[in-house]
Amino acid sequence: MMKTLKIILAAVLLYLIFMVVLFPARFATATLAQLNAIPPAVKLGNVSGSIWDGKLASVSYQGVVLDSINWQLSPLSILTGTALIDFKAGQRRSDIRAHGQIAFNSEGVSADDLSVKAPLSVVLQHYPLPYGLTSTGNIDLSIAHFQQDKPWCESLDGKFNANELIIKSAFGQLAVDKVSAKLSCPNGVLTAALQPSTNSLGINGTAQLTKTRQYMLDAKVKPPANAPQDYINVLKFSGSPNSQGQYVFKYNGKL
Image 1 (cartoon, rainbow, N blue to C red):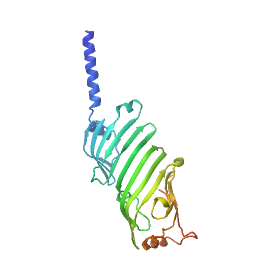
Image 2: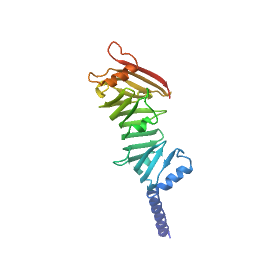
Image 3: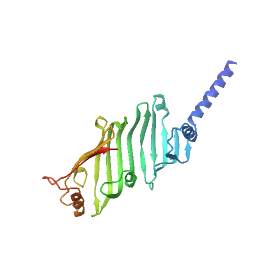
């Protein structure tokens, strides 16, 4: 009798293990939707695989679409109270491509070795350029490490690159060789810093977003000696240069 009971208990335990390991991802997303854990603005495509190794055809939010998403959830990480997910999204022809490692726990969200490549239009449709400027090109976001904190971040080590930029204005258009910004989060202030050595526009300054949603731009621009006349005309539209030949930009406001 005892032997039979042990066999039954072992079979039930084995069944439960298989149920957990093979738990369909579509059931998990359906449960989250029923619990209103997925915002209405977020639209999910077809889900397949298990919660540990799954695939999502697409996810869209406010016109931004991420497709061909694959993820692996580490079972061992769950034992430590963290959901550690390795993911990859997008294909060669996808507008947005991304990969990296994201962790969820009681302290919030963190990310490591995160890379996102997308057309600049994805950003500009939500945050248009000032002075009626428009631009095309591609952006490349690389995050070595990120730790969330309210409302932005506790720590951040990253870099933002813009490539194949063409900026258009009433004075003409300007092709930009490179723009690169260092991303950090000192004292919880989201910061992007540019230096003349990291961009071909002669920009030296910072853009910051504080915990109280105040944004601040403090930059000086000295056009390179070989700067196109169209670029100089755009700068002149903003005012006159100082004694060092720099155009000063200072803005602040609240999101």
